[in-house]
Length: 250
Ligand code: IPE
Ligand code: IPE
Ligand code: MG
Image (cartoon, rainbow, N blue to C red):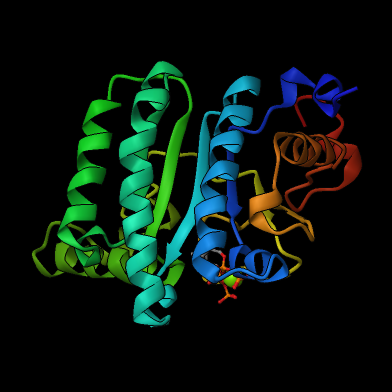
């Protein structure tokens, strides 16, 4: 029996974010090069998008390329960019068919122009889709995003369009790339690493974490459902005590 049948449809997280890690190590176990791992990672992305759609998740954010990933060998960066472009182009018709809208977060201007334009095209082509929103984190890092927000807010203050005393958490949130999205209730990381690697630093204030040792290319629908089911067994207290959380209107 699939664990999918155990999932409570009234408690589906609105936003799940995934650190897709372990492509290189997966390939190594197969005696192959790192690029082979990235290529196979695309299959796991396809399955995960489908799984998230099936249970009614509204936002699925995938960490595909971090700011720090620019420090990898040139050859790997080029291959990743090429693969990204190919995947976006090839997968868009299926995404449209499945009513999936593509969004992105990150410093898109730092991407090669060909990658940026295929992403822009895919976003435009899926803009009418109102099922799952698939958010690609590209050239993204949490610190970059927060610094970027600070810069925009500082400009407003300098131009007397905003009073510094009025800056609160909502103001910061409004100038992040994720301004129109709910914070992720659940963060998943594959490959047995227990770190956040500069992902969604502001937004994960109260996220639940789910780590698994599988490498990303082996991540299957059932793993996704397992993570959701596991999340549903937790009590999220947001600083309160258990009794408060379990009482209505307290
Ligand atoms: C994740 O797999 C994909 C990206 C970061 C682009 P890795 O490439 O980090 O694979 P490992 O972690 O080295 O095995
Ligand atoms: C995190 O994976 C970034 C992505 C999944 C895109 P990394 O493999 O780059 O993370 P670190 O550097 O090992 O923490
Ligand atoms: Mg890695």
